[in-house]
Image (tube, rainbow, N blue to C red; front, side, top):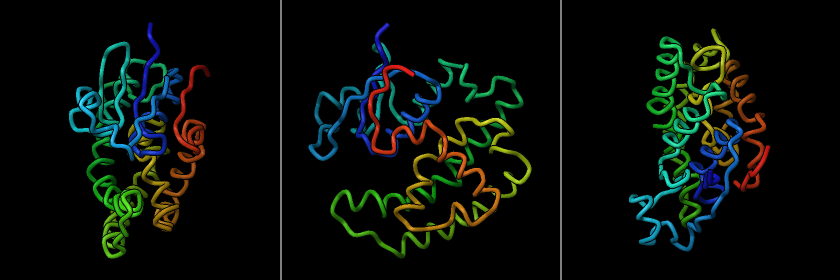
Length: 216
């Protein structure tokens, strides 16, 4: 069987999210760099695989899949020993609840911060502090709910880690390092959960950028 190929830019957020889950699931993969700055994600050849011209995508022995969360779900489903998606109906429902909450309540604000502190500088533009402050204020209220949830259980979907937790990587660390905000550590239960996430070997493996992992 051909080794899975991950196409992306080494430090892009979606690429790191996918690579983190591949590592968690102990899936060997070859990383192929798509040079964002040379516009390689907009070439006709690339658009045949990813029609939106975004990164990353995977090629799993001819099966093409894009969107980082979809890639993560596919990997977790194909390699269930990772236990990142529960199979029990009730636990699975709680996972879906947590995953939906991440996208609706965390990503909706965190993504705007990332666009300012990460995306704009990459394009040579200046971040808008007013936008950053507004997004962080909304996110702070969302994290109040996170803190209540995490006061009762270890992770967002229960006492076992799932994709719903890992989906918060890599945006949460960028908020801390690039936005210079303590929002991820000012609430005790969120801080405990967040510090564990960023300490995981799967996240730390790509601190200098995603690279191929051919064996574990």
